[in-house]
Length: 454
Ligand code: UD1
Ligand code: CA
Image 1 (cartoon, helix red, strand yellow):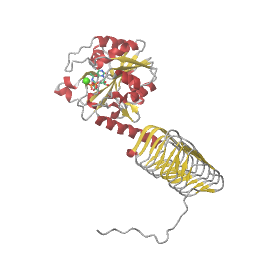
Image 2 (cartoon, helix red, strand yellow; image 1 turned 45 degrees about the vertical axis):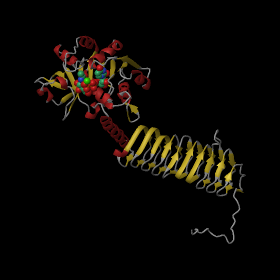
Image 3 (cartoon, protein in one colour; image 1 turned 90 degrees about the horizontal axis):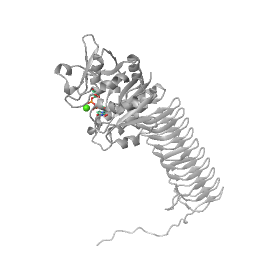
Image 4 (cartoon, helix red, strand yellow; image 1 turned 180 degrees about the horizontal axis):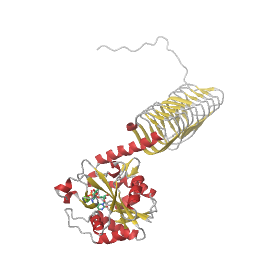
């Protein structure tokens, strides 16, 4: 039996009060619609058709994938009308699964269950809510069989008291659907072609409707405004945090952890509160991350300790290193292992050899630093001449005194020592002390000025 999936994403989303089409707002690092597409793909369908309308080209451009078929719904005349637009692309499938582009947290497990109970018949995903207002109500016969779905705006008082609602997610036999859609009218309170009306047609033909419910009602929640977006963001974060904790990650407080991308980790990693992970982040074994730290597209090897308030981006931290508090590693920073990087240190596009230390108030850019080097407080590699960037090379076991300015391009030889406060613009030889410093003098008899009386 082959499956076609239709994702309805033509709605405008006026209540988002945004110029961005609703389905492009993000949860985690992905657009709402991308979440639905990713889940749809895991169902291994023969086809995925996305019905788009409002902000059409922007939506298409933002969502990659040669496997996607895009069907335009120029005017939003209702969910039934939306599915009509997808039908020409579904002629070769047996079952049609309808998903919503703004219902991002639906899971593969729930959809599999719906498919299993519906077989080649009609399947409906419902939830039972304490407050069903706004949703279509699921009306059942005395015996329990589903009879029809009534939209809120068309419902009688009695129907309004029903708490089981339509999530909108349905599984439909394609050959019958074609005919039902052709018979839809829009004689209802909203003047729309309701997809929900096909259910009563199926029942009228003697078909029974199989009903499934999601494991967690949040799976069926839609995003219509920024409040709902924020609520589903929390739900997504909770879901991700729980999966990571089940996998052995220690989160000091899962409600103060945000993952916007993918995190892989070894055993015994501990993340303190307010750690934000973005992009692809890899942690080795026994990594500790202090509070208020952002890790973005980086690799952190075994036994590393990242202290509080660091920003680590496009960087690699070698094993057993200690970074922070208040360190910033930027793109191309590579610590090769056993390094110490301390407060107010920024490192960009530089390699720092095994065991080297950069402990305080320093900028290292476009540099190659050997092993066992000590970079004193306040050292600056002056890598930019106003037009071009140049490299600084520092040999093994060099010692750079505090507040040195290394004006690139420049080389500091192995085992060299640079005197504190020096401006080094020429290569410094290995094994020797190099410094540029005015001789210290003391002026005999000098006195501080005194305030003049007037
Ligand atoms: C719909 C269901 C309702 C259900 C609710 C669940 C119908 C008639 N009603 O109501 O029973 O409880 O969803 O959230 O189906 N869309 C289009 N083109 C259109 C209209 C809608 O693509 O012409 C898309 C929207 O972008 C959205 C989805 O379909 O993703 C649902 O549309 P929406 O207007 O939110 O449906 P509701 O009126 O809430
Ligand atoms: Ca509507």
